[in-house]
Image (cartoon, rainbow, N blue to C red; front, side):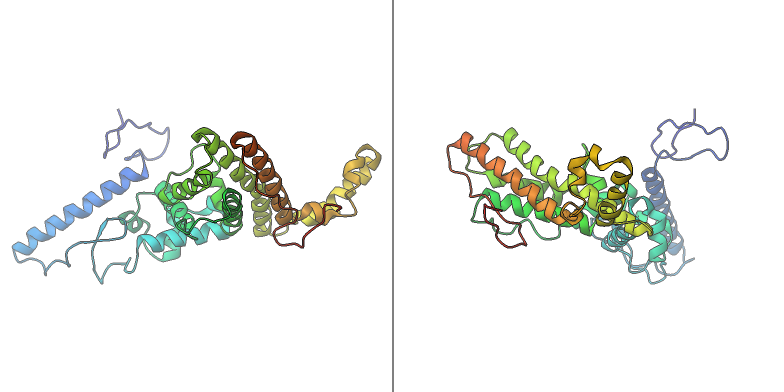
Amino acid sequence: MLTCVQCGKELTAPSRGRRPLYCSRSCQARAYRARLESRTGQEAWREKKGDRPPPPPPARPAPGGRATREDPHRTDAGLSRERIVWTAIRIANADGLESMSMRHVANVLGVKVMSLYNYIDGKDELIDLMVEAVFSEGGDAEPRDPRGWRAELEAAARWEWALYSTYPWVLEVIATVQPPLVPSLLARFERGLGAFDGLGLDPVTTHRIYLGVSGIAQGLALLRVSEIASERRGGGISLSQWRSVKVPAVLEELGTDRYPRQAALRNSPEVIADLEEIFEFSLQRLLDGIARFLEGETGRSPSPPRLWPRSGPPLTEDH
């Protein structure tokens, strides 16, 4: 039976090619570090016999608690966990998460790929650290907005919306049923739930409301991230171009009388192509509904509704 030489887990033998030695990158990295430690021990023994020069300085803790050595002859001099993480983030921002790999990161940093495993166990841990890094930006320890739950949720939703425009790859990682449970993401979520403190809501209801608000940002961010990916590939068209050129052409070909409500929008494509305005409009309408719900649940008057976009001029109710 073929097993992993590091952990003993059973492996599936390939029909062709070399037989694998490890079940995962993590096991491969642990075996690599064990070999390094073994070599260090051999060097100490040789030094005792007078066969080698003095050993390098003792190991020191690196970010994350891993031991590294200050050796000027190492090819990974200056390497750190933080540097690896932000290099990976830049790669994912520029080329998408699918192009980010340990080897790609090593190539950009100009080091051997195995040197990264002195700091990080593998790609899965690297992605977790990337999420931790970007969710740590902006700080969740700022004082709460004295205007109450609505202002808190507005700020949280806008922060999340901006996050996906700045780091499009994040949406793919966290908009799942099993997102990375890293401290900064959990802290951000905890702050959002805290917006309802003192209103007497049960934890389940609070959780559902907050997920709904976050869902507005994530759902519309799918369009934004798609637009960014299209721009990255080159030759793609923006949502605005698609709405103003492609959609009207198709409606004309099929017959505008068959789709009169969609045809009615052909003279104002910018209205439905402005994702920022769509996001703000959808967020405010959802918050209006939450306010009505809270009024029924708690007996308190809801926060006054917003009648204008965040960045636009006030509108009268006649409009």
